Length: 338
Length: 265
Image 1 (tube, each protein chain N blue to C red):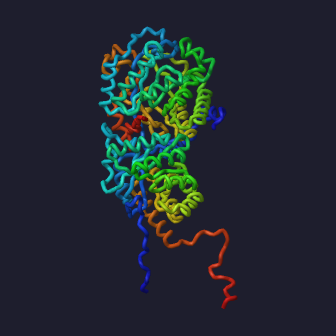
Image 2 (tube, each protein chain N blue to C red):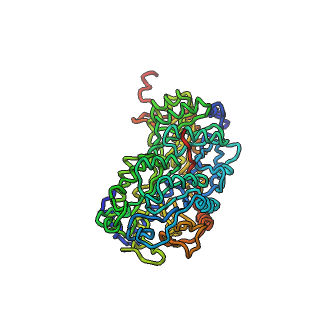
């Protein structure tokens, strides 16, 4: 394990030679453990109802956006649109509303998604172990839950009310999901919310503990950076590209087998440049509004964050092939255990 | 000068009654594209390739990996992704139902950090699948008790790891694989995982392994087909060395001419 001091010193070191060395090492490790493959996924927002008030989020409960939740028919329409373009890994998202999108609604969404996709992950409100068990049986392969920041003071400042204000319940979520049998667990921090080195160190420690306690789970990490929402600025601070790249590389070196996800929050140019530095999974052709793929016009949409990389799935696949990378659409086949 | 050396006769490499002339097996993951894979199969003349069922896209959009595997090559579906015997059994049955035959490489891994196989679960899966008529090749940690249990459970071969999957570390488990080679005579031993270079593959064969399976080293090479061919040649060379009754390495010096021969003259 790295120490906090080592992470701090790496993040503060802007010597181009040092950064290049990190990048080279990360690239070698990535190729050794994952080969020249990049998995693809797409997010699908089911609902933007939210009962938590998180100051930085476009969906938060005090924000006057149009609230919307997909009906079963609308789910089919949106999912069919993505499946037709080749997407097999789907990430279903909601705001955090235990009342509007309860377990029963999520199970319904999963049962529809099973008709279209081979791998289903969810990024929804944290739940109890039994709920995750039900979702696992229903067909959920992956759970994504970000702590956002591990700095308790900062956490309390930005998560003002709602269930998300409970730091410890959120922290225990990956463990509850693992106990329930979930195969893929994705955790992460929102870069720019608090001190980056400290958050990174805490995230690594969290992952390290999870790996020890639940070795059978496949883990992945995400490092979303603050983005504008409809052009509006919600950020406390910004993490620059150099730091961002160092974080990706450090993570790859420290956790050779752990997945690293990269969303369309990042620009096409940056994504192109860091594809080989340790990233294992990218989203493509994303829309971050409920009904954004087929149901709502751009004017009607309230995105969770502004997408930077607008290339279609097909364009991304072509680019990967051109770069001698194998775009992996399916890496999972659901097995129903009798 | 005319030599009298005749061609070395090798015993055939047989798994479950099927004979193979090439002792190099290729895994199909991690390639940058499927053309590289197809060329590697051809260049190496491998006769057995493993494919993870979870990477076969049956009904959908992705290019089907199987189209790149010649029909004369034996397909060994692996249960990659299985964390328990139950899951491995389910995957094997699914592969068979989907028309991929009954040759299955059991992989049960419940540790995403080291990807070490769980021998106990592997034995349990082997027992069930062998009884169902599958040709079962279990990937295992080189443990003698487990190897015996696998043979008893009906394994058609055993596949001990050389070192950690994808590590290119070579024969870290050498001494334990040697024990398996000495003790397990009923089924062929295929060294799988961690073999990073042709010389390491040759070494495994010199020791008496029956075959070697390689994936990562080939898939991530600059020129996969050339390396695949090189591996295949190294495996054949190692086999010849083994058949030649290669003198073993010794810990103490031994003179080429005996020093005490005069006593008996």
